[in-house]
Amino acid sequence: MTGSDAAAAVGGPEAGGPTSSPGVTCADGELAEEHVVLLSESGEVLGTAPKADVHTADTPLHLAFSCYVVDDSGRLLLTRRALSKLTWPGVWTNACCGHPALGEDLPGAVLRRLAHELGLVGPIDLSPLLPDFRYRAVMDNGIVENEICPVFLARVRADVVVDPDPTEVADHRWVTPDEFRDLIDAGDVPVSPWAALQMRELDAPGGPGLGERDGSLGR
Image 1 (cartoon, rainbow, N blue to C red):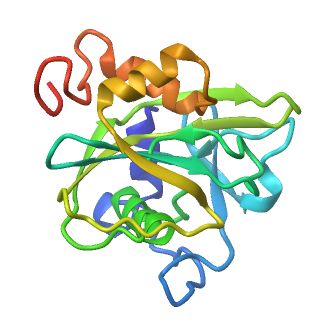
Image 2 (image 1 turned 90 degrees about the vertical axis):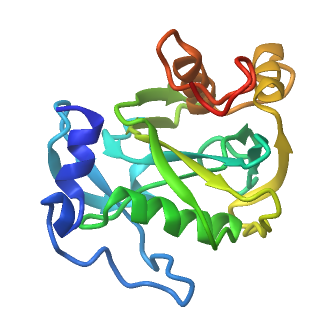
């Protein structure tokens, strides 16, 4: 089962997945108690577990997503993860990451997190980039990330207002795609392992890309 198959398995009614509620929500639409969807090695749903309990030295495989935000001038939004984060605090990464709840379709989960983490609302053109991305990474302290993590592209207007939640995002900046590539290649500033791997796949022959090297947004 691919990452996109796993996503469909937990999606809402339109995806043929469970119809259970994703959980109690706060006033901003964010989940009050976040759970992650646990997956088998073949990508089949095994159940759920509280997010707060999942990330250890033996993190089980679970479903997540990543999102790259690009404005209509071709700039890429980078964020620096809050220092209070359990996994990879303080590193620079793509705009947004998160976990869909059981019964929540992936596009809806991405839009929910964009609003919660970055205050991004209004016209957003969301499309898949790497629907089958999967990775495992280990922090220096032994904590593991282990995710099937479909990657999305969110296109926004150049005048979009970014209003980050400080508990999620310590800093943010707009860069060109090549500037992000250079940041990763230089190795002087910590970058999340998933973003580095994703950029490599995006830029691989036949990959969708993020633009600039060939003069366009994507290939």
